[in-house]
Image 1 (cartoon, one colour):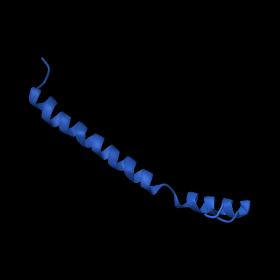
Image 2 (cartoon, rainbow, N blue to C red):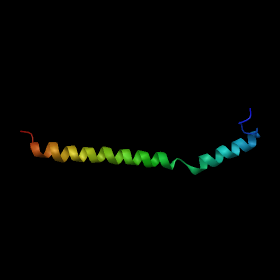
Image 3 (spheres, one colour):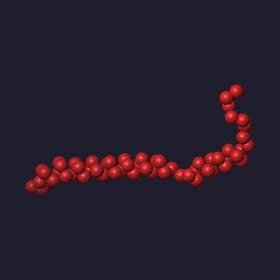
Image 4 (cartoon, rainbow, N blue to C red):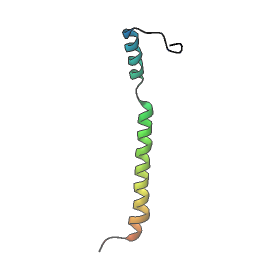
Length: 58
């Protein structure tokens, strides 16, 4: 094919994969942290604005 990359050796492909894996998944960790922070914030908002105003159970 005209637009394909030239073939590479398996060792070069393995090296490229190792470099990508060594960089880690920082983006996924950031997204997970933001999602966790949103869930905790919603839980506190629900607690403060729904449970506390209702008072204690009799």
